[in-house]
Image (cartoon, rainbow, N blue to C red; front, side):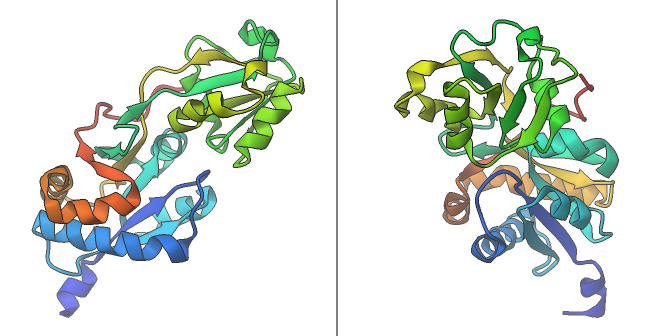
Length: 256
C-alpha cells in the first residue's frame, strides 16, 4: 500500500451497546462487510477499515478519533450522542425480521401504571437505558416524572420478572423483545403501557464531516446497492441485515 493510500485510510466504527456480542466474534464478520462495501462503492482496496466496540463509552471514545469517519450505531446511541459527535445520517439499516424501523413498548405490571405520573419513583430499565435522551424522546406524550431512574440493563427477562411481581420497575423493549413477551409464563401479569412511534433501528452516519461529500455519496450508493447484490447478501446475513435504505431523518431529534 502506498504512503498516500495509507494516509487516507478511514475507519468505520461499529458500536452496539445493550446487545450481546464480543469483539473477537464480531470483528471477522465486520471485516468481510467492510471489504464488500469498499468494492461496492468503488473505493480503493484497503481504504476503509472497521472496528467493533460493544460499549457506549468505548464506542464514543473511538468515534472521537480523527480517523473515525463513519459510525454504524443503534438509533438510541445516535439520539444520545449525535449532537456532540456531529453525526449526519447516511443510511438506515434494514434488519432481518424487523425492517428499517421499529416501535418500542413500555411494559409494566398490569394495573400499576395508568399515566406518566404513576411512574414516580420507578426504575425504567432497557437495553437502551444508556441513552436516557432516547428513552424520553421515544415515550411521546409521556413526560417522565423527575424521580424516574433510567438504567441500562441487558437482563431483560429478569427486569420483566421484577415488574411482574410488583416491584416499581417498568421496562422499555424493542420490537424483537416485545414479540417474545407473549411466550413468558408470567406475561399475563404485564401490560403494554404505551408504544413509541416508528423509529430507526440502526444507521450509518458520517462523523463530524470527516468524509468529503463526494466520498460520502459513493459510499451511500454502495451501501444502498448491497441489498441488490448476491455477493453482498453473503456478508449481510451474518450481521442480521437485509441491506440499507434512505434515511428518514436528517438530524438529531429535538430534545424532549
